[in-house]
Length: 343
Image (cartoon, rainbow, N blue to C red; front, side, top):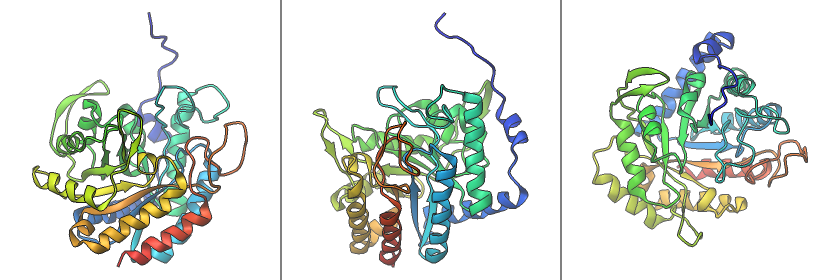
């Protein structure tokens, strides 16, 4: 038999009962959800900045980083809404390498899925309870949604998951904004079809149950660049790309035409320092066109305390062990620049 069943994991209900979110923190999240919803629907003119490490590998360093974001949020609250990235599942192109804290709470030790689920939940809880900032995470495994459904204010569906039926149907049951990234091929129709699917109700099997969903009207697109058949990165954040996206949106029966732009990955050719220039171009394009301004609701930025990345065994505090990130000094300046450009 190919599968070896190691142990049965606790249900989401059991984990949530062991690690409950306080009543006060629940109220904070609900208010934040309301504000993010208003930005996606166009009722609020503030701009979303979804920012943080490529992968949330160390609870203390990640929470240190979020504490800094919280102080900046107070200063830019009239123009920006900051959503920290706490990405606890890391997709791997070849299947090799660190798969995130949900797999390995300690990157230098063997996988421990039970400890990982607890670590994942505790980190998200700290972000809300200590800093008042509910976070974003990538839904790599739809079955894990129940463990954090009361904690997340934003969910991203990655380029390799966006065509998957299970991901699309699961998102249709969310009540928080969910960003569907374009696939690595760059085919925008695939991304928009995923948005359409997730915005509509469905009937399917989920975690051993027959379920029905009502559809998630807050599902929208995320542009992250593409890779052509020769392996060359092709960005899709330029003015002309956004005009094309608007035209494609107009041809489909979709609610709340909205886009978030990922400033790293194939948009930057993984040159993390280029994120500063890319974000400023996006903000400039919003200033040039009122239609683009209404369409582009936010950006995603990969950022940590120290710039660049390191090997798992190097132990540099606050430095990414996966993709390279902007350092804190540059990130803080960039957030203030975004606020200044969102007039």
